[in-house]
Length: 189
Image 1 (cartoon, rainbow, N blue to C red):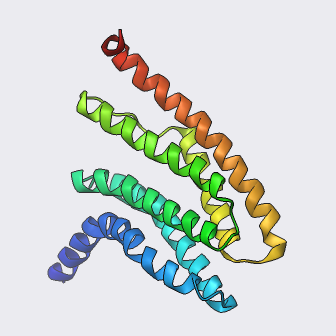
Image 2: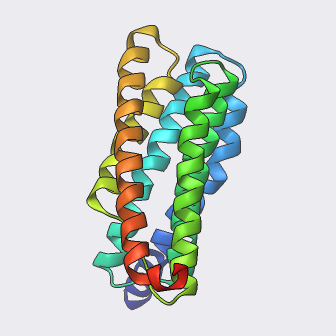
Image 3: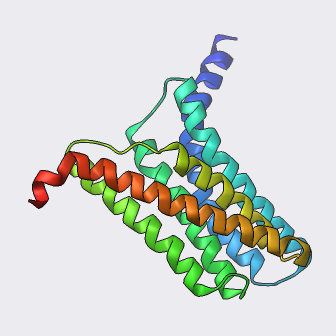
């Protein structure tokens, strides 16, 4: 019985990083399923994206609850989140569901914030995710899931939610910039 408890404890300890890796591994599968434009495959692709998005919330929660925050998790988590969203937006752009310039708005913001966080880390401080960033992610994930379904009745709702997420995205980006500027403005003077 003790071995079973140890196995479960070890499995739970590694679960957040496994969930993070799932988001990376599922990307090619979503792309492969989506290129066929067959309704059940579109649903499966949307479902896989939604599960990946849910794991974004779960991995951090589990890591904090089990007091098991790892350096690799801290590095891979935001990368896997951005890869999943960026890949989905590129897929949606290729399918002509989302305009390229909308995808560019999102991708540029995500890359800029990643660079800002890296610069902050190099200077010895971190910029934590804000509540606006979390709200952005929730709207973005629901929007992308709806758009991946390729159902006309969900397209307008998906696009509205995507625009709401972009508004939160740029607002949270501004807030991140302000935090960065507070710590490093002396480097620019």
